[in-house]
Image 1 (cartoon, one colour):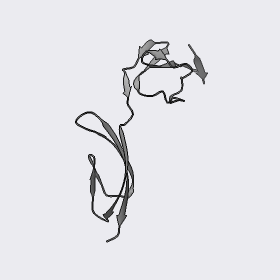
Image 2: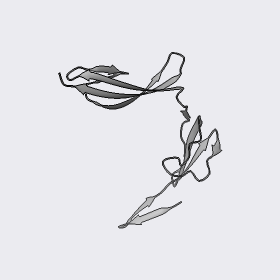
Image 3: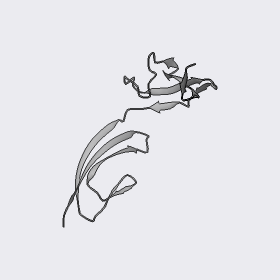
Image 4: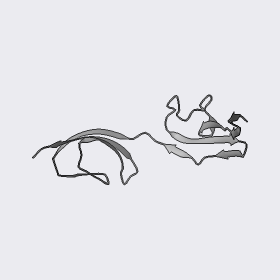
Length: 115
């Protein structure tokens, strides 16, 4: 256990380990993974003074289809993209899941022209 002391207060720190398919990812203790390990079931084990907890499985899958769309609307109009009604020019990303549970990742570049 690691204890930090600051201005008379002590804080119990925690140590986290990441696992993929039940196998420890050695050295992966930061909030973000340093390497992409591919699809699979990931968990985080957190050890602190309060004990040890293991997260629920996070199932990571790589989208089966990736697409880029360029669309222009007239100023004041809206475009339905997934469940969002878009009116402002910007770059939007949406993950669509088909009825057969296949993922598609779509990036939309939306522009608006003055009328």
